[in-house]
Amino acid sequence: MKKIALLIMFVFSYQFFFGTFLFIFPVEKDSDLTFDLTILEEKQAYAQIIDDNEDALNLRLSLIQQSQESIKIAVHQFKDDASANLITMALIERLKDGVEVEIIVDGLMNPNTSQSNYLLLKQYGASIKVFESRVLLLPYKGQNRLHDKFFLVDDVYGLISGRNIGERYFIKEENAVIDRDLFFVDPDTVEDMSLYFNQLSNPSYSRSIEGTLKDKEIENTYQEHYDAYLAAQSLSTFFNNMMEGLLPVDGLIFLHNPINRWKKEPVLMNTLLDLVKKEGQASIQTPYIIFDKKLALQFDEVKDADIRILTNTIQTSPNIFASSGYIFDRKDLAEDFELYEIQSNLSRHTKTWLIGEEYLAVGSLNIDPRSNSLSTESMVLVKSSDLASIVMEQMHQEFNQSLQVDASGSYLEVEGIDKIETTFFKNTLIRIVGLFTYFFDALL
Image 1 (spheres, helix red, strand yellow):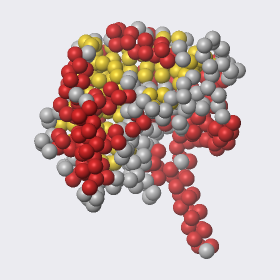
Image 2 (cartoon, one colour; image 1 turned 90 degrees about the vertical axis):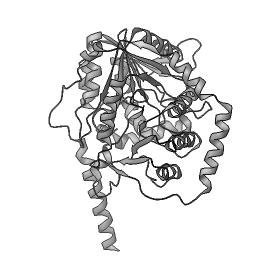
Image 3 (cartoon, rainbow, N blue to C red; image 1 turned 135 degrees about the vertical axis):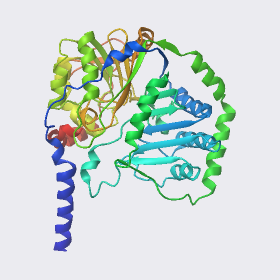
Image 4 (cartoon, helix red, strand yellow; image 1 turned 180 degrees about the vertical axis):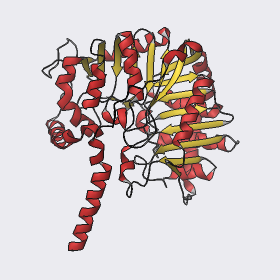
């Protein structure tokens, strides 16, 4: 018994030191590296914004349906549920016609690599890889998660988002999660994203799933659901309408974090903040806000800019660990920025930066230390006053459902807007968790 206890203590200490403790130390040097945004001026492309959950699902299905050569999907989570399985059957339909399908998912957030839809896709020839899995022996890998969410189709069409592939992101019921997509047509940007996808799928970081599907009835169940959905939709008409609704933009550029393990240089955040500093104003929507020392220093560089930040309330935020960091930073954030919390029962998962009058960034980047320096993250930055105006109007509707937090942590009252009350249980739980996460804010 004593030997077993010692073994358990050794394994726990090993996991804690190499998977957690090492990451609280700062990077060897701060980085001011950024992407060169001058190429935004060098090309024209077409883009459109999608906020509606059902439209987001139909866009993915119609993009897959229209594909002729290749589909690449990088996503943090690919669930095994009703919406995910519609996408699964749409992909299988194209695999049968010879379209090449490559998928990469995060290894920690998708631990069941033998889930039915994965094995079914594999059976029809799809390449499915998991990023940084099997972290038991090499626990430091567990901190570098794949957090990207994008589709690439036929080297022409691109879709980037904060949406995972799962039911909550494509429905309108009570437990829905609200998010935003950027759909664009630009072969150059798609090529850049494809090169990045290939880096993610490199065997140094990712492994192919193994196994075969044993339950032969599952495909029939999926097919019946898919056929019923198609009978109620006209995806070809939807796709044509989406293409007609595309707006010409002055340029696109794909931005991303480095892929290296351990701490990453915060190139993506640096690039966006440099542009904020240049333009002097920004409206940012993010599901979480957590500052460690590094992020605080980065945002200190734009303290003279006019910055509004829109986020969830403590009650509606789905991430307990993120909330445990935010609840202690909330007053300071409200003192430094215009901080708004949307008073809605639906959680927002949107990651959008509206910078100046004509720049818009959409993708996977949260404002937290993990997104800044640990996870793979990506966004597409668009230069377009027309598209920026559309998103500003959408965000304006969200601000009209929000209350501003003041430096005391209270709300500035607005007639007609009722505040969402945080339950005693959730407030207590978050504060208890925060007593521990306070020492590891660089990992939140």
